[in-house]
Length: 160
Image 1 (cartoon, helix red, strand yellow):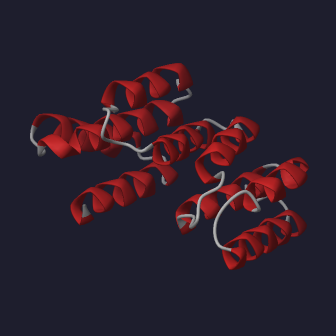
Image 2 (image 1 turned 180 degrees about the vertical axis):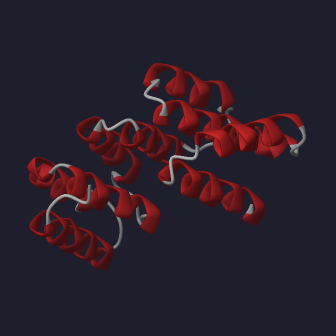
């Protein structure tokens, strides 16, 4: 599982850097030479590359193609849909997917919570919606911290 998390972290870093060539390369390696459990990660890397290119429909198809009954769990899949939407500049739909990813969760992955904040940095008009998502799941402390980060991001303005 640690290796899978490393793939996921690295492909997300490449996606944020908008390194399409590296994402396609990672996808090929994971799909052709990686272990069987890396299959979803390969499709995920390809989905991120397609999203950066603005091909959201194709990106979402990639996520679907890589999903199995065992992985990803619904919350992780929803978070990846949100990442695809975010990369394509679709911040409101990204927040909708994040709402599904965090709803009722006992704990929320900090990377997912930071994506809520990133959406508000890109579009401050989404503040109210993002605060609702921040309060949607996690420990009470996580909810308060996430909501505070969302409000702080909205008051600082757009990140570019």
